[in-house]
Image (cartoon, rainbow, N blue to C red):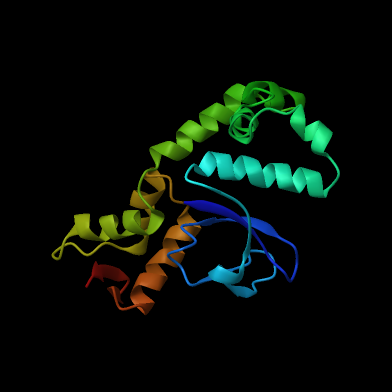
Length: 176
Protein backbone atom coordinates (compact mmCIF):
# COMPACT_ATOMS: atom_id res chain seq x y z
CA UNK A 1 0.00 0.00 0.00
CA UNK A 2 1.28 3.43 -0.96
CA UNK A 3 -0.14 6.79 0.04
CA UNK A 4 0.60 10.29 -1.14
CA UNK A 5 0.73 12.34 2.05
CA UNK A 6 1.37 15.97 2.84
CA UNK A 7 3.17 17.83 5.58
CA UNK A 8 1.12 20.42 7.46
CA UNK A 9 4.32 22.33 8.26
CA UNK A 10 5.93 22.88 4.83
CA UNK A 11 3.33 21.48 2.37
CA UNK A 12 5.72 18.84 1.04
CA UNK A 13 4.06 15.90 -0.72
CA UNK A 14 5.76 12.51 -0.54
CA UNK A 15 5.08 8.81 -0.90
CA UNK A 16 4.61 6.79 2.22
CA UNK A 17 4.89 3.04 1.79
CA UNK A 18 2.69 0.90 4.01
CA UNK A 19 1.23 3.82 6.05
CA UNK A 20 -0.72 1.50 8.37
CA UNK A 21 2.42 -0.29 9.53
CA UNK A 22 4.51 2.68 10.73
CA UNK A 23 3.29 4.85 13.58
CA UNK A 24 5.30 7.91 12.57
CA UNK A 25 6.75 9.38 9.39
CA UNK A 26 9.25 12.16 8.90
CA UNK A 27 8.86 14.88 6.28
CA UNK A 28 11.79 14.70 3.84
CA UNK A 29 11.94 18.50 3.53
CA UNK A 30 11.48 19.98 7.01
CA UNK A 31 12.21 16.80 9.02
CA UNK A 32 9.04 17.21 11.11
CA UNK A 33 7.81 13.92 12.57
CA UNK A 34 4.12 13.17 12.01
CA UNK A 35 1.81 10.48 13.32
CA UNK A 36 0.81 8.53 10.23
CA UNK A 37 -2.83 8.36 11.31
CA UNK A 38 -3.02 12.17 11.32
CA UNK A 39 -1.31 12.73 7.95
CA UNK A 40 -3.62 13.90 5.18
CA UNK A 41 -3.76 11.26 2.47
CA UNK A 42 -4.32 12.66 -1.00
CA UNK A 43 -4.16 9.33 -2.80
CA UNK A 44 -3.80 5.64 -1.92
CA UNK A 45 -2.96 2.67 -4.11
CA UNK A 46 -1.36 -0.76 -4.03
CA UNK A 47 0.64 0.23 -7.10
CA UNK A 48 3.73 2.38 -6.41
CA UNK A 49 3.76 3.64 -9.99
CA UNK A 50 0.16 4.91 -9.70
CA UNK A 51 1.02 6.66 -6.43
CA UNK A 52 4.03 8.34 -8.05
CA UNK A 53 1.86 9.48 -10.94
CA UNK A 54 -0.74 10.88 -8.54
CA UNK A 55 1.94 12.77 -6.58
CA UNK A 56 3.29 14.24 -9.82
CA UNK A 57 -0.20 15.32 -10.88
CA UNK A 58 -0.81 16.95 -7.49
CA UNK A 59 2.50 18.82 -7.68
CA UNK A 60 1.72 20.02 -11.21
CA UNK A 61 -1.72 21.22 -10.11
CA UNK A 62 -0.23 22.95 -7.07
CA UNK A 63 2.13 24.89 -9.33
CA UNK A 64 -0.54 25.70 -11.91
CA UNK A 65 0.75 23.33 -14.60
CA UNK A 66 -2.12 20.85 -14.82
CA UNK A 67 -2.61 21.34 -18.56
CA UNK A 68 1.06 20.85 -19.33
CA UNK A 69 1.15 17.76 -17.11
CA UNK A 70 -1.78 16.24 -19.00
CA UNK A 71 0.30 16.34 -22.21
CA UNK A 72 3.25 14.56 -20.59
CA UNK A 73 3.90 10.82 -20.60
CA UNK A 74 3.57 8.72 -17.46
CA UNK A 75 6.19 9.49 -14.78
CA UNK A 76 7.84 6.07 -15.22
CA UNK A 77 8.27 6.68 -18.96
CA UNK A 78 9.74 10.12 -18.30
CA UNK A 79 12.22 8.60 -15.87
CA UNK A 80 13.32 6.10 -18.50
CA UNK A 81 13.73 8.90 -21.05
CA UNK A 82 15.80 10.90 -18.58
CA UNK A 83 18.20 7.97 -18.23
CA UNK A 84 18.82 7.83 -21.99
CA UNK A 85 21.77 9.97 -23.12
CA UNK A 86 20.95 12.99 -25.23
CA UNK A 87 24.51 13.23 -26.53
CA UNK A 88 26.87 10.29 -26.93
CA UNK A 89 29.98 10.37 -24.74
CA UNK A 90 32.37 10.54 -27.70
CA UNK A 91 30.40 13.42 -29.25
CA UNK A 92 30.47 15.34 -25.97
CA UNK A 93 34.20 14.77 -25.43
CA UNK A 94 35.02 15.91 -28.98
CA UNK A 95 32.87 19.04 -28.47
CA UNK A 96 34.84 20.05 -25.37
CA UNK A 97 38.15 19.46 -27.14
CA UNK A 98 39.15 16.02 -25.81
CA UNK A 99 40.09 13.03 -27.89
CA UNK A 100 37.57 10.27 -27.08
CA UNK A 101 40.11 7.53 -27.86
CA UNK A 102 42.64 9.04 -25.43
CA UNK A 103 39.99 9.22 -22.70
CA UNK A 104 39.00 5.59 -23.32
CA UNK A 105 42.65 4.52 -23.17
CA UNK A 106 43.10 6.37 -19.87
CA UNK A 107 40.05 4.58 -18.48
CA UNK A 108 41.42 1.22 -19.62
CA UNK A 109 44.75 2.01 -17.95
CA UNK A 110 43.07 2.80 -14.63
CA UNK A 111 41.09 -0.47 -14.79
CA UNK A 112 44.32 -2.45 -15.14
CA UNK A 113 45.39 -1.39 -11.66
CA UNK A 114 42.76 -3.48 -9.95
CA UNK A 115 44.33 -3.63 -6.49
CA UNK A 116 44.31 -0.74 -4.04
CA UNK A 117 47.66 0.99 -3.67
CA UNK A 118 48.20 -0.01 -0.05
CA UNK A 119 47.57 -3.64 -0.99
CA UNK A 120 50.31 -3.43 -3.63
CA UNK A 121 52.76 -2.09 -1.04
CA UNK A 122 51.83 -4.92 1.35
CA UNK A 123 52.30 -7.39 -1.48
CA UNK A 124 55.83 -6.04 -2.06
CA UNK A 125 56.63 -6.68 1.59
CA UNK A 126 55.08 -10.17 1.53
CA UNK A 127 56.84 -11.27 -1.67
CA UNK A 128 60.23 -10.45 -0.17
CA UNK A 129 59.56 -12.81 2.73
CA UNK A 130 61.07 -12.95 6.21
CA UNK A 131 64.64 -13.83 5.22
CA UNK A 132 65.01 -11.16 2.52
CA UNK A 133 63.74 -7.92 4.02
CA UNK A 134 63.41 -5.36 1.17
CA UNK A 135 64.67 -1.79 1.21
CA UNK A 136 62.39 1.16 0.52
CA UNK A 137 63.94 1.42 -2.94
CA UNK A 138 63.02 -2.21 -3.74
CA UNK A 139 59.47 -1.73 -2.48
CA UNK A 140 59.08 1.49 -4.48
CA UNK A 141 60.39 -0.30 -7.59
CA UNK A 142 57.88 -3.13 -7.17
CA UNK A 143 54.97 -0.74 -6.61
CA UNK A 144 55.83 1.66 -9.46
CA UNK A 145 55.86 -1.30 -11.88
CA UNK A 146 52.23 -1.83 -10.82
CA UNK A 147 51.16 1.78 -11.25
CA UNK A 148 51.70 3.23 -7.77
CA UNK A 149 53.70 6.49 -7.80
CA UNK A 150 56.99 6.40 -5.88
CA UNK A 151 56.01 9.22 -3.51
CA UNK A 152 52.72 7.51 -2.69
CA UNK A 153 54.50 4.22 -2.06
CA UNK A 154 56.91 5.83 0.40
CA UNK A 155 54.03 7.52 2.23
CA UNK A 156 52.05 4.27 2.42
CA UNK A 157 55.14 2.48 3.74
CA UNK A 158 55.52 5.09 6.50
CA UNK A 159 51.82 4.74 7.37
CA UNK A 160 52.12 0.96 7.66
CA UNK A 161 55.04 1.42 10.07
CA UNK A 162 53.18 4.06 12.13
CA UNK A 163 50.16 1.75 12.45
CA UNK A 164 52.38 -1.12 13.56
CA UNK A 165 51.60 -3.25 10.52
CA UNK A 166 55.21 -3.13 9.28
CA UNK A 167 58.58 -2.36 10.81
CA UNK A 168 61.81 -0.79 9.60
CA UNK A 169 65.24 -1.62 10.91
CA UNK A 170 68.48 -0.52 9.28
CA UNK A 171 66.66 0.65 6.14
CA UNK A 172 64.99 -2.75 5.65
CA UNK A 173 61.26 -3.42 6.03
CA UNK A 174 59.12 -6.36 7.02
CA UNK A 175 55.41 -6.95 7.43
CA UNK A 176 54.33 -7.76 10.98
